[in-house]
Image (tube, rainbow, N blue to C red; front, side, top):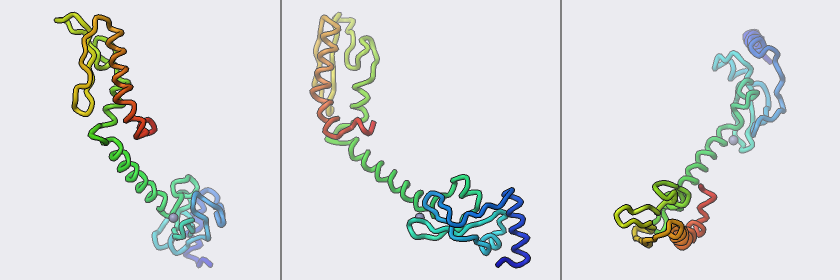
Length: 180
Ligand SMILES: [Zn+2]
């Protein structure tokens, strides 16, 4: 039971909170409130009610009313740790997937949708000197396409065909789309 000092503190807590709400037994994310933590509140000189909570993972943590009520604290810290771990795993996974078979899948995927230059299709451009359309494509550091066309659409088609032939299988193989 709170002594006189604590009682004053609790009143202050109540004043800060407006009205002290009993959070015992309530759940906030992974935390279940066990009881008020007067010791913690006193030792930390906190001007707000603190609650001893048990996390789903088994750890105990004392949290301020405010942090529970506004959703700022939802675990003993294990959620944050898990997320950090997930993002590291995800990053590693992505890095592995991006650089496969000497190919950067990001660049590959971009190349499929990027539009630039004279034709509006990547890898297809107008050659002024020869007065023709040229369709080009590099794949794994090799020129796999370098053809001249009188007709622009033929050049675009050639480029699309090459993309289908070289890019699509590798993007599909590594299921790239779900990462992009
Ligand atoms: Zn936890």
